[in-house]
Image (tube, rainbow, N blue to C red; front, side):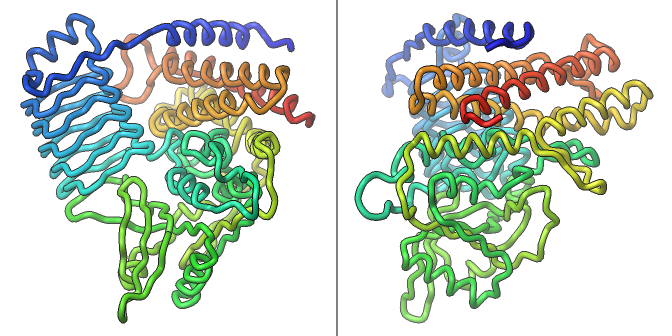
Length: 501
């Protein structure tokens, strides 16, 4: 298949990078609980180029520790003293932070994917601009904490962890194997099934906004449908009807998703400003009380009385109606996912998901009043707005557009990496020619994400370094042109895989 030169260069560079990563081996130091590491020893290890990943910091006295840009993946912090510690731009994937005194800890711009934080005191903590993908908080004190700008998934979508849990809860019908009992419903692939990994939405009126939902479809519905599961969305229920529908669905063994407004005493910031999607697992009567058991990522299991559930069951953007639709009057939103009436092969499921991805990437806003632009059209509109502001030397508009490089850009990067992971994983279900094309497409997506991360030049006030505003904008226009070319090639490749042109 022919590709233009810039894209071919991106593929070659990404393949070389992947080879380097594949042969890099991290040798974990042996834990020594009897002699916990000191701050001086940690700094000496960093200066010597030694890895801190997988280390055991158990019982270490590390109050006031400052670490920046350090790999702390799978490190253990049991019973450590982390009061007032600072972790800036650190990778803390699969970290285990348990039974710690972490009052006033600061976690800024760090990756806490699949970390477990349990039985710890995080009172007064500051958790900002961090990735909490698959992270669990269990029995954690958060009084006075500040949670700002955090993402609950690579794409910024807030529903994916609950969606994965719900899909894996759906039982197969009859005998045989249902896709819902396999890895396709797992957390690492659900962004591909739902379409969140392939979404892009640009709001010309508010460039700093990331709508967090696809333009063309409800992602919860999309994920369920590609797995062959009947799904029903209900937005305008009264309280009595909502509780009765919830009871009937749970008794039938259906998976039930609903948004809850969660709050903790003294906690501030935008992370909890919007409701979190929860999975209801049980509704029982104990005496005169009705209790509902729910799983609420990332805060684990909750048991709420009916009055508490009624108070917290609140709608918001997370009802996930497509961005192309006008918001409706939502009261008690409830999504129920039933067991699949038929069994789909993994390839069938993936092909449906890819078909949805193509539709999203090629979507076009047809409303003359809408300021929201999806997919390839959205990328082109962002570039057009940036070029127009630069040509007019419109400093006010440039500052407004610079907001895009925050949450929207970071979420876009995360989404495309999630898409690459999805395509790489599902390639095994295809014949060699299609599999190779999916792997090549994954390489393209990773290259695109890396380009947006490393080549984008911050141009907002106070962000400029060596470049002038005009130079930074020109660099970014080139980046967006290359991004658009890659996205178009991705669409072409996916159409070839599905056989649809």
